[in-house]
Length: 341
Image (cartoon, rainbow, N blue to C red):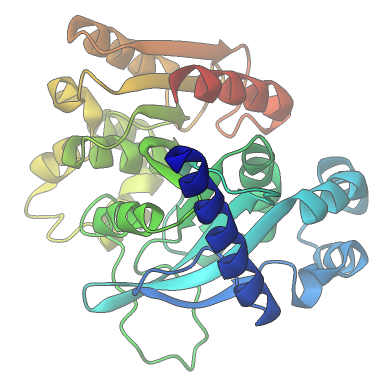
């Protein structure tokens, strides 16, 4: 009887709390002191499918046929109906970072597993997360019953030119890893998350961020890594542009400390640091021109030799982004999450 009464009180208090916040047009889950100005993703241009499509097509960012194929309206309508999506700002030490939070619309209180998604690229605007990125990865995962949270990382060029505050720095796998780990206490304070079920997913540079994060926290149950650079020392030999435009510009004191700096960011040199309690799924295209698949195969063997549960899914002739295998990748990711969380 006491248990039933306790459950009843929890449900009623949750619903009362949610209703009060919804009346004030505030998201029901943001209750962490470091969260600033959460805002629905479905505002402005993204408030309608027509407005979003017209903007991207008119600016030439995507061809008309490609847009409708990649971002069909039926999915836009489904995601808007079934998933809550918010952009937000959060405080990390002395600087501010932008991020996204998505979760399924709940008809009753529930504790959901979480996925921290780490984006690829560097700090330039073209590489930062946008609604289209959420559409292809975050929304489908959230729809399956997961809380999905992402950081733009410190130093990302996602702020208006007039903003004069401290927005951190991007060291390409350096101090901004702290911006990713700062998402954990935010998740812990959400009333809809299970703090014991946390996955981390990253693509390209985001995979590197995920691997480094896993060495600094034992909270991550599983890693899902796509097109992930695990050996930057070898990468710079066949991608000199990466060294010129990324390593030299973002990594502190790079010229004086090249080898050590790249090894710190290259998981192939420290497979023993990945906790044995963390499983790893690696997704890779055999025609990836940015990260050679051979380096991934070698890294998988290194993890196996250290008794880490790891699985490699190769996509024949697949590119770095695997955009051409998006449906297959999502299916694999969903199965892995259901199995490992």
